[in-house]
Amino acid sequence: MIRSILVACLIALPAVATVVAQDKPKPSSPSVVAPPVWQLAITMPDGRTFVSDGALAVDAKIARPDAMPKKVLPVESGKTIAGRLTGKYADEIALSGLRSGPRTNTFLGPRDIPLNGNYVTFLRGVAPRSRLRFSGPLDPIVVMLDGQAVGLLMAIAMPK
Image 1 (cartoon, helix red, strand yellow):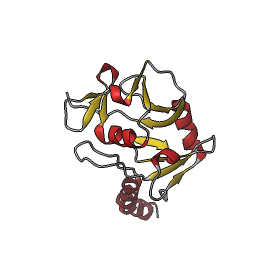
Image 2 (cartoon, one colour; image 1 turned 30 degrees about the vertical axis):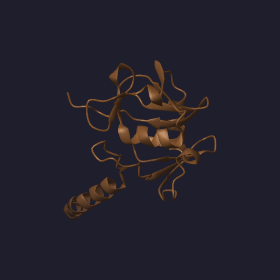
Image 3 (cartoon, one colour; image 1 turned 135 degrees about the vertical axis):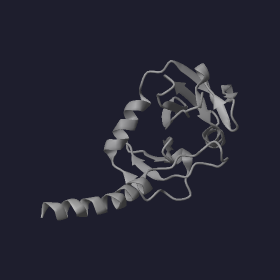
Image 4 (cartoon, helix red, strand yellow; image 1 turned 90 degrees about the horizontal axis):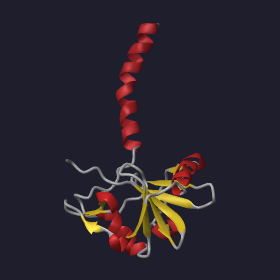
């Protein structure tokens, strides 16, 4: 009995791993110039809805997606994002203050924190007055618009 349960689990594990991998968002890569593909909707505690591709989460009213993602994360996920939106920051810079990065389609923020050019281009198009708040190189970057936090952006890892 135990042996047959173990065999059934071993057979099922690859299928479960495949489903989990398929559900994981696929963020934009700077190697392919393209706008974000919204894969998740996130219910925020304040009633707003954010859309995300896994590396950029932004208020849906600013992103104006053609269609809302079918996968909706609960308000508990929104609470995590909301906590990051109000965190301390060391630097704040306008989108226009970013410098070109060393790799194609990348930008550098304060302390040479690298950003995916697809996200910078997207933000420049939908919210050109945005400002970015940076903490450390591994911390999410807060997107500010008219004094309100409207998104989170992850820096990219640059090979040494």
